[in-house]
Amino acid sequence: MAKKKVLLANNGDLFKEVEDSFLYRDEYELLFAANGVAAYEIAVEERPALIFMDIVLPELNGDECCRRFKAHQDLRNIPVIMVAHGDREEELQRCERAGCDDLLLKPINRQLFIEACRRHLQISQREAPRVALRLSVHYGIGGEERQLLEYSINVSTGGLFIETPDPPAASTPLRLEFFLPGQERPIRCLGRVAWLNAEDGLQNPQLPKGMGVQFVDMSLDDMRLIRSFIMRELVA
Image 1 (tube, rainbow, N blue to C red):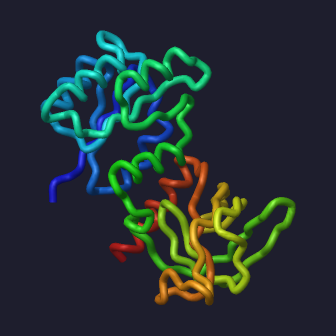
Image 2 (cartoon, rainbow, N blue to C red):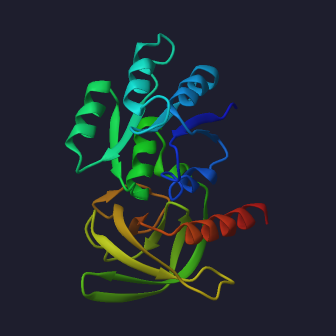
């Protein structure tokens, strides 16, 4: 199956902290452009499935490049997500006038970037490879800390499932800490309860009662650590 292509247009390291969000997915290919002219030429040649574009680009600014995309018969339906400063009203107005499909604000939040990708590429959270294992997990809600011991979990780079008879409500923010097998340092990140598997509504009958937790604001090092662990488990 041909890989879906995602074009990142920026004259710097704007996407440095988020591009790894895609690298673990074998079905996607990242394309890069350092200026607006190159972005347009790459889009014409490669036909990406999604374009992220900084509004400020050499040679051809992002908003003008977006206009050219939307005026091109073969490119007009490609979603274009513009990136601009939220405190610069003029930039936001330029993005709107350019006809972009979505907007991200600088500095880019990794989770918002991933959600935009899922939204425009119709990626399911559960598409990411995951493995089943049992872990001890610390999680905190507000000032409260709980210790979960030997609860069944499946884990992916996007989140994990925790078996518990008393999960918090959906969308509850969490603080997470857990050790992967064979690792000496813990993984710590924020998360949120994405969905519940409860008696009054089993979203996945193959799983016990519990909660699906989405990772939020995880470091690139921890994301790579989880991805490497999953890949080893899948080929073992």
